[in-house]
Image (cartoon, rainbow, N blue to C red; front, side, top):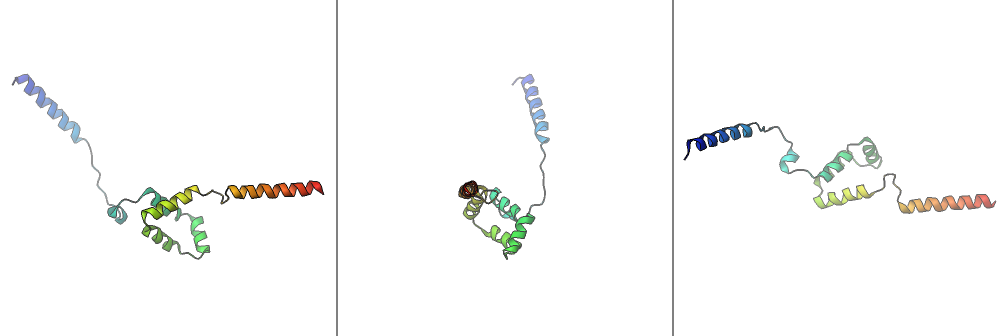
Length: 118
C-alpha cells in the first residue's frame, strides 16, 4: 500500500476515535416501577390526576381512600388503563354533555315562552 494512504487512514481513524469519545453516558438511580417496566403515559396521566387536591377531596367525599385509588390504578391492566384514560379524555370538562346542553336550551326556551306569554 501507499504510505500516503496509510497516513490518511490513520488520521481518519484517530479523528473518528476522538469524535466518538465525546459522547457521554448518564448513570443514575431508577425507581422500582421503572425497573419493572416503563409506565405508560396513560398510567402516568391517571396517577398524576390522583395527585390533584380537588380529585383527592372528591375521593374522600365519596369515601374512597386516595392511597387505595393509587394502588388500584397501579394494579390495573394496560387495557383498563387505556379505557379509563380514553374516558377521561372524552369526558366534557364541565361535566355536561350534548344532551345536557339540549336540556338547558329546552328549559330556557320554555321559561322564555311562558314568561312572554303571561
